[in-house]
Length: 336
Image (cartoon, rainbow, N blue to C red; front, top):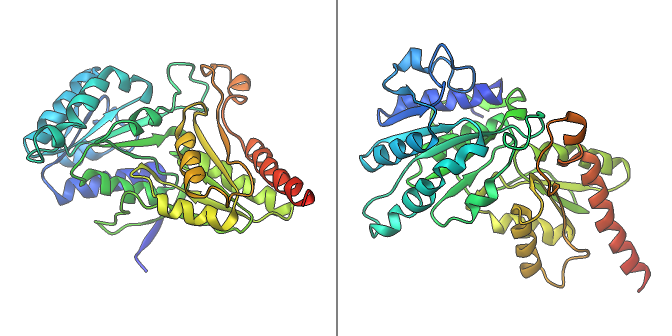
């Protein structure tokens, strides 16, 4: 068993960045306020240790950050670019969509863009309509992009390490509400979790609660409530949305025959829609109930905390969705 240490998500990501900088001189970080003394998040202390040429503070220009990262990647480096707030990634979307994601295809495999884009989601912190959006579904739709959303410190470290050394552009989505959450993390250098591997974080037999990122913890809380009601709920953490682990997804739901998909992204046209479509196609005739979805409501996020709480998923909403799936099963069975 590898040595593990209890640490927060912030500390786990910091350790992954630290060990990547130590392991490979091609790795460097760039973004707004990521260097000391201003750094307070996962990059804290790294510019002091490695110098400002490898932990580079940039102007407030998302286009400049990602443009520089793509150019450096083409030149053989392994840049880790931070977009402080995910809502602002649209300013540099063209460079991601039409440059980084297409580079391998446009050069017939001769050149790729091995960049990692770290970005934070502030959903649930009452930061308002333009500072709280979970936009991962945008980039799931872009061939050539990989999309990673960890839920635990262990996954944060292991998935970030894999993203940094992946040959293709990876969007690594961090949830600010998880930054202080603690868990055991392997401390050895090089610990990595392969992209595209979901994990069953709680086994169950009656229904599968499918999620990623912060909403995994809503699924855990809902599973505990359902257990009190005599329902055994499995919690499946997808961990990466591209590549999506369809095999594990289908295997879990083929056993339980019921599913609820939960995410902080807007429910309409969100990642859960694709997951539900896959389950419908792969398990048609085997599902005991329609796949349920619980996502953010289709409204701009309010800045008032009491209103915002009505927008995003909660354990109660997940439990209600699970009960709908189970009630459908009861009605079908009762009818013969």
